[in-house]
Length: 130
Ligand SMILES: [Zn+2]
Image (cartoon, rainbow, N blue to C red; front, side, top):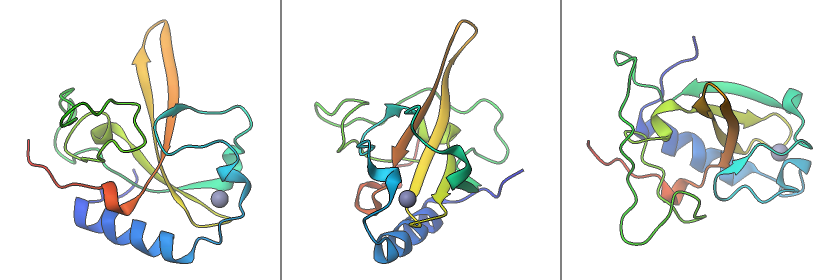
């Protein structure tokens, strides 16, 4: 099982990643500032899971979303609130080439399954209690 990352640690990792990312990695070919279905061009082997935002002692975390104002789930400016859906189901992944951080989770179930990915921007991470 990957390590659980609390919000403070996620912010820390995201800031460090932003400070060192060179900006010329193939992982940024498709804009991933907001949630996207994982592009087929994405090279899976390039990513390494460094942790999870899944709560440690709650197998069924909430489906409530934290979207203040008119912000939508898909927005590039949507807050990253780890206590809320879908962040509470996300793995935290690092691009092994540029060091950027990404969140990934699987949306849906049964007949509808969609693997989604979003780049992490430290400035968007918010520690909002449930
Ligand atoms: Zn990269």
